[in-house]
Image 1 (cartoon, rainbow, N blue to C red):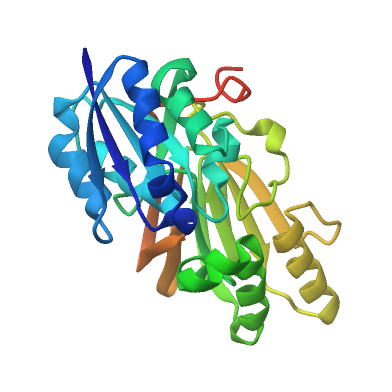
Image 2 (image 1 turned 90 degrees about the vertical axis):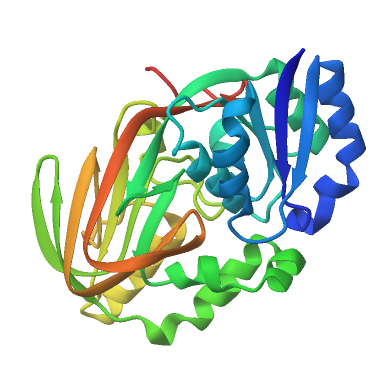
Length: 304
């Protein structure tokens, strides 16, 4: 019998994993796993547990929001030979679940994570050395992701982010940056930037999502230029909210395996919905096929 480590966040998604715990463990047991369960107690717990105990298990499954998945990945990235990783989504937005083609019902997701899912090599990002699963972003609205209260998230779900985003509009200011990537250098004033490897970001589908391949070693990069006129403000805001290309050139898009972003002052980041620190010189690297994550059969994002 193989060993499975189950890490879950008891407060995520209105506590639905805790409510369904018995059914989830029954699925794991029927699939032939001997299960060790760890409910996280505080921020960073999933990282510590995955790092310290992961090597003793054939598979690690985490349950919670995208933040819980990101924490677990951070721990596994410190291992020389990380085990397979499964994920049971139960957060407010569940962007990673959409990208991985995972069921949103805990019991069905448990079946995918323990027996029916497809082990798939997946790229993992690093921002200034810190791992991230699907997105690193800076500038306008990025504080919304990690600054929105848990009560608001639980009550309104994705709408909470929109509400907080609108409230943050008066704080928007441009940032002059030098952006070095695989094919050149861009220098301009920006009020938002995002580096991602995902089909869903903040519950929205990014532009050119047909180019997203989870194991190609490339990020999708989106940079929104500083607004100069009221029309630019409207175009930039629309580009951010809809993630669609605009005719004004406000939204710059490209793919790259590595970025060096340099500013005149520290740049504040969010990674996978949590605060990601601040640096003047920021290095973003793609760690190709760094982990093997179990995806659903409906996902067709790897190995074009």
